[in-house]
Image 1: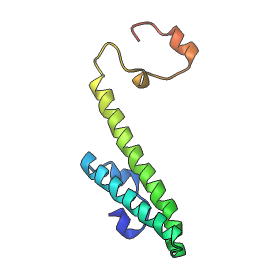
Image 2 (image 1 turned 90 degrees about the horizontal axis):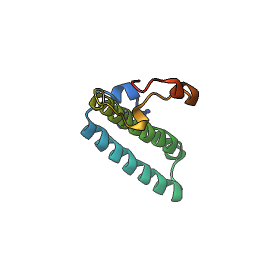
Image 3 (image 1 turned 135 degrees about the horizontal axis):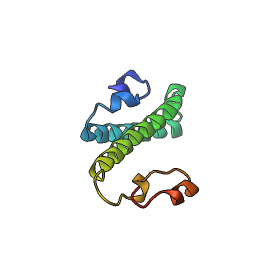
Image 4 (image 1 turned 180 degrees about the horizontal axis):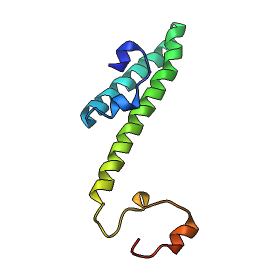
Length: 104
């Protein structure tokens, strides 16, 4: 577990985990962050203060991986549909999108 080593959470390690594991890790990190914030108010050790940054970035990484996986599953689901949700369509530029054929 990344939390035990005190290091940052790595995205490629998270991609192997299931959604339940990711959500559990997210709640653990959030609990840890709240305890660190309490330590900051009560005047805790400087090592704990510097760890706040690491934990916040780890939370962001976990959320990013969850969102990426969610989007990936949606892309698979809508692959053969006639219309896709706007956020799953190709971005390109407005001018290029206007030039596209309706079939695209």
